[in-house]
Image (cartoon, rainbow, N blue to C red; front, side, top):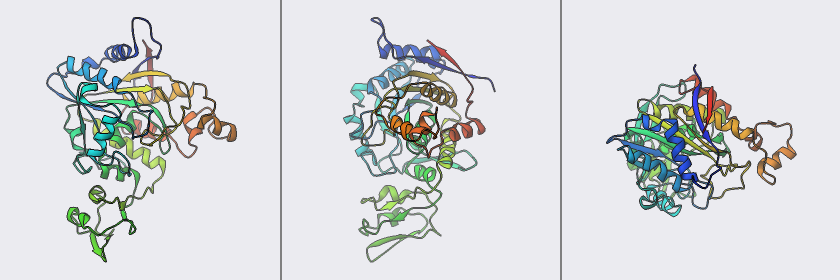
Length: 372
């Protein structure tokens, strides 16, 4: 396969060009205007950051991309889906509150903010993929309704997938709550009796009579349950839980298949900022110190090549003293030396995501890096 072009620029600035202007120049040089935006809805898929986390991308960067889309006649909106875990982004109201608190408002970004899978994370569209692990991806409806997809990714470490790049931003981030459950688990949800109050909300939403309530406690019959996850979304006490029972490699493969399902059939463009490279996901309500210095900004039409270029660039960086990576390097020198992300989380294998994405035809891991 022919090498994909990945455009790159450092965070160095001049008296005549600041970082926002540099990001604009990067995406224009990379060809974002080759997409016909006229009168078309453009979803800018971004992570708004869990409340308490400060490593997420600043909203100023999102405004640059929204302005580029508007100048081309498009209709941009910022979007993400609700989380499967309990936190500050588990439903659309809390999610919007968190996004606004973190600076992502229509006033600061110049476009609307839409939670793609609706109020309770159950507003989804089925995207066919016929993959090795996924046959129909359960994706936030607003994300699938968009004519164009732009991923704006904070590239950082991740405790389950090794790193969080463009593929994770799109695939895991684009899944509805049920979609996230499918990626994280081969099983079906269970009820925590301690939390359940017997309100029967789960019975009302189950289309397969898979839930019963006895003595004010719900029970899920796994023989009837199809694993749709809607009961997780409607439970007011977060008493219904998904089992995180698959390997990290399987998670990475499912995530790649979800990302391909979301990208297929429409123009896509991908941007990654490698800064504040925290060891864990921005879904954490805290962020540790970065594991490496800031690297720069990347852009490409190929999300696989983009992730590969970012990973290679990170692995060429020195380790920041006092970071999780430095501690692991000092104590586990035989564990993935030279691979910063594997050294940070030795149980992860980010290569499995790249390899599977290449296998299913989402892109290539071969790239030409063009510095501007």
